[in-house]
Structure formats: structure tokens, C-alpha cells
Amino acid sequence: MGRNPSRHPRMLDTPWTWIPSLYFTEGIPYVFVMTISAMLFKRLGMDNIQCAFYTSWLYLPWVIQPVWTDIARRLHSDRWWIWMTQLLVGIALASMAFAVKMPGNTAWILACLWLIAFSSATHDTAADYYYKDTLSTEKQGLFIGVRSKVYYISVIAGQGLILMLTGGLETYFRDIRQAWFTTIGCLSACILLLALYHLLVMPRNYHTEHTEKSGTVAFFRQKGIGCILIFILLFILPKALTAKINIFFLIDPISQGGLGLSLTQIGFAQGTIGIIGLSVGSIMSNNLIARDGLRKWFGLILLCFTLPQLLYVYICYMNVTNFGLICVFIFIEQYGYGLGLTAYFYYMLHLSRGEHESHYYSICTALMALGMTIPGIFSGWIQTYLGYNAFYILAAVSGIVTLAVAPILYKQIKTT
Image (cartoon, rainbow, N blue to C red; front, side, top):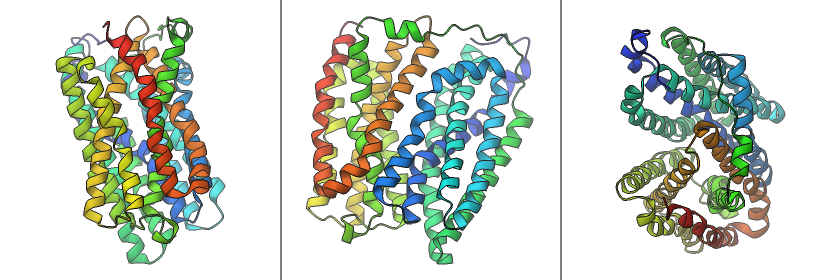
């Protein structure tokens, strides 16, 4: 709910001073935990089984987010949580930088990653509530596009520029640990500076009692909840299986069945070209659904979401090594993922309409995180046992599960 503009004119006159930087800061820790951490462990010599297992568990803070958010908002203001979580992320990154420099500190690196993940999940919700409570309804509409664009820029910066910088530093220092120490240290300094900046420029919350009732029980009592849970958990199964393995495939040497790309190449291919494809797919899907409704484009979006998994099968069996062609395939795969993911979010928004809109949506995103966590935990074992060729065939076949649960969504959107 927007606030009264006449009471807090400064809040509504200067949103440009904090909205872009806030959502840029939101994206970096998430990317670091979900993607860069896997790259880091691979470069430090961890095998695929351990790497997938440890990094997949980092989704857990997003799984418990609905419960924790309700507690957190009763303890302190959203502005306080934003600043505190940014401070914690900066400190955790600084601590991790020193841990990376010395061998044998895997447990400490994981502890830092858990702190970053928990802080990032808390920051996501606090930022969204702060945005809604600080801006009028009209201003919220004007800045919704700014939020999403800045977030995508932060993802490109995280998955693209950071990896390319680290790759360059590895070549310059000829020391993997020194390169990562430098990158993570610089990232820590940037986050801490942004935390200080937001402390100074973000309008102070005028405390209001948190009276929103939890809708958890109501959510799980709604009609057709069994089908809803099956759809949310299984629709993204192909992506959940391959999310970590794609990273390993790009970085593992050719002798182990991978592509043997450098961090600089991965940062450009996956972190830049891939994210651009994801963004273009998301924007196109959003425009088509907003204009014509999800039902009209559902079949095409579904095919675009599932079929690109075959590209990795092609790369494996045809021994594709041309970097330009690899970039094209990654763009297509991420473009299809963007189309499908946007439709997936539209469905969750449909489920979240009503009295408990915000809480319902947080439950849906938590279930999505759970759907990513469980397959991800076992993906390293499966890939190691099968090898990359057979694993990607399995991932492509898992798209049948997506096609099988899709009628659940179609049946519900047919009447909306």
C-alpha cells in the first residue's frame, strides 16, 4: 500500500537516488551464491559431486523465506533489514576473500556463502516491501520497469564481468587463489560502499505495525493444491537438473568430457550472451502474455522451454568446440528458459491473487526454490555416474515431466 505523498514529499521526489542502486545490489549476492560459488569451487579443485551438493543447498534460505520474512518484519523495519543484510554480505565476502587465499578453508568459505545466501533472501523481501511502502501506487508502476532492467544489469555484471575479470586476473597473477582473493575483495568493498550509500540516501521508514495475516494455512487449503504443488515443483525439473552441471560442463577440460572454456570465455558466453538471451526471452514472453493472455501462447512457450535442452546433447555428441557456435547455442537455450520462466511466474501471480497476495507469492517462490534444490543436490552424482553425454540425454528426457504437468496450468488458465 502506498503512503500519503503529502506527508513524506522527499520520499517520492527522489526515488532515482536509491531504486537503481538498491536493485543492482540485490542481484549481485544472488548471482554470487547461485553461480559464481560453483565456479569458485571448481577452480579450487572440488569435484562435481561435492560442488553440486554444497551449492544446491544454498537455495534453502529462499525455501524458508515465507516463514522467516514474517518474523523479520515484526522485529525491525524493512529499511533496517536492507542496510543490515548489505553490511553482512560485504563482511562475509571480505572474510571469504581471505579464506580463499589459503588452502583448507572450504568449511569457512561455505559458512560465508550461507551467510550471504540468508542475507540475500532476507534482502529480497525487505527491498520489495520497502519499495511498496515508500512509493505511491502511481510511482510503483513507473519504476517497475527500472527495477527489472537494473536487476538484469546486475546479473550480467555478476555472471559476466566478474568472471571475465577473474579470468584475466588468473592469467595476470598465474595464481588462482590470488585472482579470486582480489575479485572477491573488490566485490566486498563495492557492497560495503553501497550499504553506506543506502544508509545515507534511503528515506527512513515511518514505522507502521505489521498486521498482515499469514496466509500459509489458507494457501495449502485451496482447491486443487495437490496439482498446484506438483506443477510448481516439477515444471522446472530440466533446469533444476542442469543448473549446476552446465557450469561444470563449460569449465571441465575436454579430456573429462567438458568444453574446457576459460573463465573469461564463460563470463562472456554464459554470463553475458546467455543473460541477454534470458532477458530477451523474458521480455518477449511478458509482452505476448500481457497482450494476448497466457493461454494463447502456452503451447509455443512450452516447446521453447523444453526443446533447447537438446542443444547440449548436440554439443556433447558432435564435439562442438567452436566458441561462436557455443555462444549461439547458449543464447537459444537461455532465450527459451526466459520464455518459460516468465510464464511460470505469471502462473504464480495468478495463484497469489486475493487477500494474502504477497504471502502467497512468497510461498510459490519458496516452492520453486525447493524444486531447484532437490534435483540440484543429486545432479552431481547423476552426472558423474552417467557422464556428460548420457546426463544431457536424461535432462532432455526430463522435459517429458514438464510436458506432463503442463496441463495442470492450462486447465486453470483456461477459465481465467
